[in-house]
Image (cartoon, rainbow, N blue to C red; front, side, top):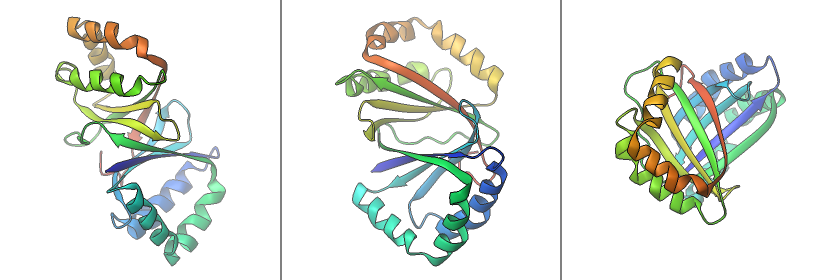
Length: 211
């Protein structure tokens, strides 16, 4: 199984037009016939005018086959691609290996945080293993949505996602986690394996499977 995290950066002011095409053309055309959509979000904190979407494929070969089939779809080419391309500044993708199954949160109305860490060379897998092992402690405070290791374009990345009801609960949760002795022990063991850390806070779109 492979997951693909796509990030599109739009020209300022073009987000509403993009989302209209995504909701009314892209989703009806694609459904889950060309890869399974897990979530579709817009950035709230971090780089603005971005949409993030997470897809699942059985394999890299299956992804290539389905994307070729999608590119041959007449409605996709003429009603969606031709209209959204002028709205975009850039497109970025990450091909990801799941470390844990995706766990959508219950209900709706969540704020999502995606955290992207770049590990020192050779340390991504050891860090991910330690992080996965500490999840029973971390999930006492909030449930993880997913953990992935980067396949391409950056092989030393770890991506993880969390869902919170709101910013206040996120802040409270992170303070409680930071005070946990077992979490502090994890940080002492794993912290030196990382070179860079970044995060983005995301809001789900009306048509996102994760709400």
